[in-house]
Structure formats: C-alpha cells, structure tokens
Length: 185
Length: 185
Image (cartoon, rainbow over all chains, first blue to last red):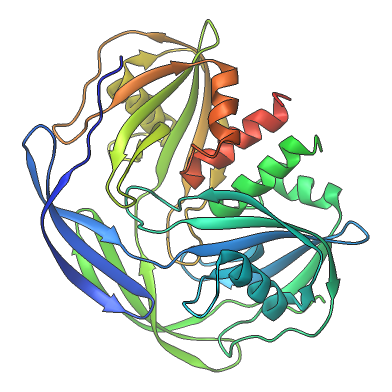
C-alpha cells in the first residue's frame, strides 16, 4: 500500500520543436525499475494565470472567444501567460484582466495553483479571485484577440458550471472551488 | 457587449510531430478580421478519462505516481486514455480503474466532460463517479507504470484539495464539483 514512488532519471534530452508558441522536448528516461523509455515527450510553457473577477455589484467578468484546438467558441475566465516582464503572477493576472476586459482595482486573493497536466506540461496555472473590480478603460486587445466580455450573475455562473458549459479544466477547477467554499449550491 | 465571436478558417495544415505519444499540427489560419496567423499549434490526442471511485465503506481510491512533465510525485484520481478498442469512455474508465487499482463493480455516473485546454488540445476528458466499487484483483500495470494505491477518507480528500495537493486540473475540477454538490465543506 505504501510503496515508495520515485522520480525518473533523464539520460538525454533533445528539442523537437522550439517555436514561440510550442516547445516540445523528447527525453530518454530511466524508470526506477531500470527500464528505459527512449521517447518521453514534455511540453515546456511559461506559467499561466486566470482570474475570477467580481464587480462591486456582484457580477462575474467572463470572456467569450474562439478556441481553435477544440474548434469551439468558449465561455471562460480572463486568462493569459506570465510574461518575463511581469514582476510576479499577480501582476500577470492584473495585466490580463485590464487588457482583455478593461476591469481593474479591487482586492486580490491567490486562489489556487494547479497543473494543466503534470505528465506532459512543465508549467503551473495560478488562479486569483479579485473582488470589487471596476471598469476603468476599454479593452486593449492584441491584433489576434477577438474577445466579448460578459457580466454574469452568480446564478448564471452556477448554471454554466452545472450544464457543463465551462469546458476549460483550468477554469472549472477554481470556479467549482468557489462554488464549494461560498456554498452557492 | 454581445459581439458575435466567429470561428477561424484553416488555410493549410501540416504535421510537425507524429509519434505514438505526441501529435503536433501547425495550422495557418485566417481570423474573422482577415488577419492571418501562419503558425498556430494544435496538439491532437485521443479522449481521456478519470474516475472518482468510492468503496462501499466510503473510501476514495487514489493513485500516486511520478509525473515527469512537472517532475513531481503526484496524488491523483485513476485516469487514462480512451483506447480505440474500448466501446465508449465508460468502458475506458472501468478498464483503467481495474488495471491501475484492482477495483471494479459498483454504480457508475457520468460526472463531467471538460477540455484539458480548448486553445491547444483537440480532445476532451470524461470524468465518472463510481460508487460502491470493490477490490476484485491485483493491479495489472504496464511495464512503464509505477503506481501506489491509497484509500482516503472524505476528510482526507477535502484536506488534499484545500491544501492544494491535488495539482492536476482535470482532477481538481471534478473533485471540487464533488465537494460542492455533496456539501463536504
């Protein structure tokens, strides 16, 4: 029952793809049993952030955008990538919220840190809860971003969750934690 | 506010990596604005499954294993890949639970279907809740699998969640949904 689980040893490593939006590494690894896996694939990404942002009048700030991996228009939390110019993940999350939605300010709390996939991804995703945010500007989108902002009631957020319309695991996890800890069900 | 979000057009597509455990595609896409992105990367995977399995005496069946992307030993739900030989995702989940833990039987419910990442991944992850599972055999592990089974109380599961030790987003989401809907907090 309490078998000790050990790390793998990396025997060698090479990059298959090294592009601005995809870095894929192939490791040759040795398992604790001594068995070797000649091709284990690892995807290297910077850390990510997202934010459950709630306005002073209790509306949740959501964004809607097309997601090409799944080929669907997706209802999501505001999210983005930690840039090396950001002081920390909190600053990344504040920056993304302002750029994508024009909302800022309020009281920010670190909510959870999770892994997109610990088997394949090197990075973590940091989720924040921001209370009492206010609209301070318009959106400042990249040329490639096409994002509609929606302000939802708590009931609407619970409805999206229970009907399975929040598909993105990195957002469903902090939102369900929010529902559980705020006893919204 | 209610801007219409549209799909992208794929102008052409080529595979960068096509290996048993990694398939990476590069699409040249045209956005609704007419702007073209010459390199948008998509990762193609088969669907995945995981299961919140609870024994007759209320213990949650967890697995502990090393995850090389993050470089950590990870406490997780039993999970795996939908094989083409499985009739459906329910059969995949039953097969993975039996192979990784030796537990089977009980009453199974479809719990949630989420996306690892709708921006980059083509696949979905299907989560089940299995109640009253029983130990029917030993583990049947692949040569590459090194998995310790743990039977946890509901309090221990809540403790892992609240202390942030359930890192994997695809598992944190259904587990927090379980906590919310079963009012475990």
